[in-house]
Image (cartoon, rainbow, N blue to C red; front, side, top):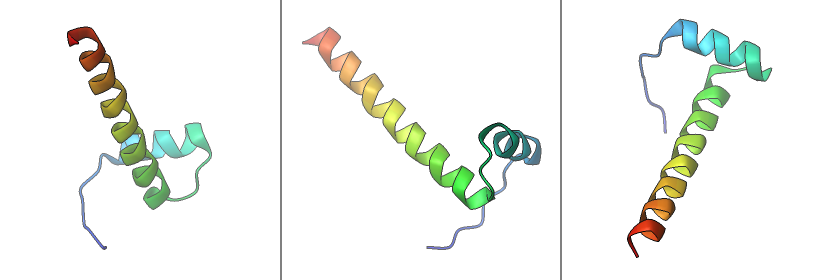
Length: 51
């Protein structure tokens, strides 16, 4: 699926430099995966605290 998004160029350049990843597409895909993982970890922690 093709999507057009506006991303802070400074953040993209910093992420490319830090990770060594070559493309913006890869950076965005990894960021989405990391966000998903963080959300699942947070929800798991929250559920464990509540139950």
